[in-house]
Image 1: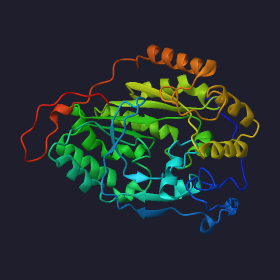
Image 2: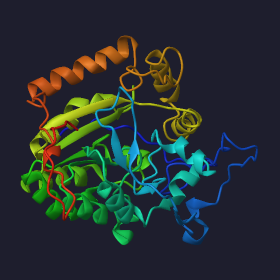
Image 3: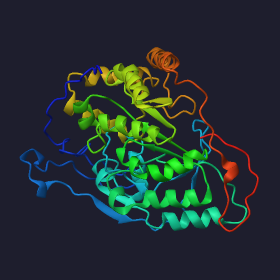
Image 4: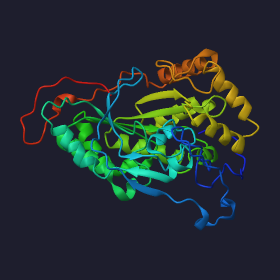
Length: 367
């Protein structure tokens, strides 16, 4: 396996905390209060000075989220957690933390809101008279297998409910922790009710450690693809996000390694930098890749109509302009060459039933 390595600077400063994506905590865009960046002396390896993860109980009364975006292939999702300890600096979900009164910066990866009532609420919503079943996606916003899942087990409890109801599901994650649940997923996959997508952003360990500090190492994600595929679970690879001038040179290699591991489908998206994320990502580049920062930002702007972000439907995931078109062409050619361009397998909604009630006849749907 050949990997094009990026030289990561051993950064130190106000924008860096070891094991975290960022040390910055920009102001919540919905509030007037301001927060200042700080340096807690992480380089001294004093664990007592490092920001710890705080768990916050969510008292939500509903759990199934719905969207009507023309860019998404699903309409319903469940997110067991808000915020994500993986700390990926590029995560498009960071700005959503502002709706909770927190910052998109360090708060997003250290103040994790968990939903202990999610399984009970899901069972209640699926059992409602008149409920229209659909494929449910886990991981559409934040990762359902982030580190805290190992102790809380909310995602697994959700899978148990979905299996009881024969409700099809798709999972998006960058965690090898999904392998823990291959018993449930393999049983559901045997009935056409489950598929998993592993996100592999880079195969370069130093780049992954800097960019996705608490996510699974690239090699572990490929191993997870192998284990899931061996268990009969359809698994795809998400080569996302592609960051112009940073990890895009690895696109074909990632796809090749994923196919060797057992991936049967592939997807990609261009980097998105909504709201506060533009400043956070810019700071990260200047801290870790100062010699590359201006070039990467220039290519992003060339693909986003001169801006760091473009939120328009139909183009926000792919970008526009010559550079974005080139990436799209490379992806298309690679998936054709590797046999990843076949029509995706269907997830079968017709098997949905509420335990204790006779099953209804439903139509099939795609995830």
